Image (cartoon, rainbow, N blue to C red):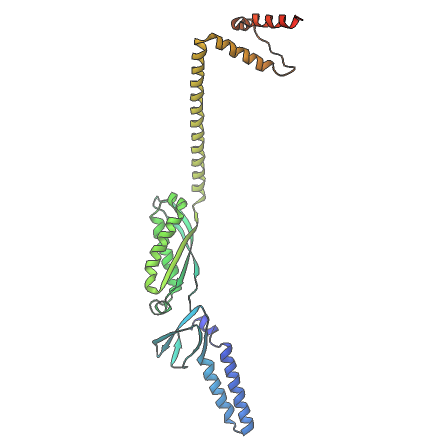
Length: 290
């Protein structure tokens, strides 16, 4: 007999009725001096002790009479005929969660992975789950593990890492179609973790780092090309307009001398080429005039 049934073999109501029958028999025996009264009361109490069952709100149970399915009972108070009637295992109809693992399973690109997933399911037909499958809990777990391994073999590692939701929906559809005849529905499947060997993880990390370095070098090279193009364009402008080149040189000299206390040494040839000698002399004469 299942452990659940053993725990629910005797409930508080049945124990209370048994105690009332036993005490009533003892009272009648004391009052009437009929010593068999307490035995009759005890037998009646034992009958109700095995006949009265309490089914919780979220549970269902099948009543079998001489091994043949009779009816589905629960929740609430259920009275059966002892010896003639037996009860199946109690079926919990709440949403339940189970964990399934797939260790060292090869993906489509032959990468060994360990996958950890959970799935939410419930029994929507207690009658089917009792009559159609012997132990639906073990059947669900084994079916989910098999489906998870098959799904891993159909996906690449990159798909499993980036498209977990799609893989979960695929597993949910497969399991739901398989378990519907059992009166069970799978609401959702979630892939919690995808683990790969440490050596492969290190190699993938090095590959990603090398890819980032390559992209950085490409960006730097593109920047150098753009800068060189701008310099070439500036050289063409300055070559066709010497005055602009001189003004640029004066601006650079001014920027260098703008800070207080700074000293800039400019070769005389640079001053002559830019025509700064006359400009500086004119500025000095302007300062000396009152």
